[in-house]
Length: 369
Ligand SMILES: *Cc1c(COP(=O)(O)O)cnc(C)c1O
Image 1 (cartoon, rainbow, N blue to C red):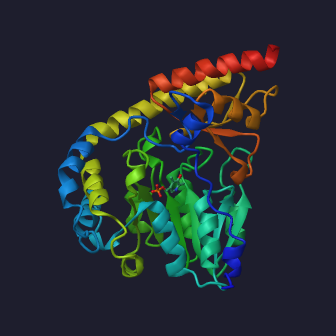
Image 2 (cartoon, rainbow, N blue to C red):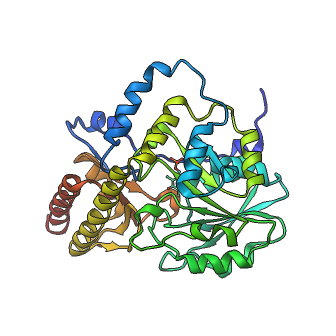
């Protein structure tokens, strides 16, 4: 038998949200509402759909190596130099390559909170890099002192997710600036801003102060606010020498022709973007209030999802299963070490109302039935 690397033998795969097809077939349901993977409640922008239709005949060509048009568009969009942009097949690919480019297996380490986004754990493991984790504080804020205490001269990546997944906790830029100043210059401060667009404040990101902090990487994705999770596009704004090495090692065509066209059109459609942000912020307010009035503990969120604990008379696991039978997919959080909580992506107005209606019925049954 061909031996398998030890890191791979003990590898625990990332757990994706359940799919609509799976649940519709299992429970024989005509309609299933998926609120499990933080996807866009408005679907795909009509402008992107139109562009994609027109580009289908080009799909027989390879994409242009290095996706130069997209690289330039992203740089222009953020008013930074092209040399600072790296684009990948989703942020997942960017995260994977960061480990493999900066951290030497068995020697270097990375630092993140616990719980954290699952990909940091899986890709560290696959790269053979130790991931050191410090528990979040009680209010789901990162424990910056504990994280710094784990950092040493071999720490190459220091992850902070803002807003965080799965809590929706947002760390303000001033806290990040102070943290950045205290990190060794041999360590890349990775700010995962997958959900930054949903924060309800004027300046949610440290990005405008990029010049002050040359060892910070900003990670953004087209999967959430741009509604393109299925196309797989993510990007990083990072120090030019790192961007250069990421481009060198990336599989040459990982971002497909259609993904590139979708990303270009997506960035340009500011109307869809604004509508998405508004829908999420309104839905977040509605669902937070509604869940609280039903007796749930809801963690305040600045993201497009809510972390909540159901009332004492029904466990998160049972509630998840009852909701599945009724055609609602939420996210269980065993893999995030939060088995008593569920995570719920903000849907559109109709989806949110149907969910609250269903929960009202379920809670009535469970409490009095
Ligand atoms: C969704 C998500 C990503 C990655 O998204 P891609 O679809 O791979 O671009 C990265 N970080 C966090 C925290 C996420 O929740």
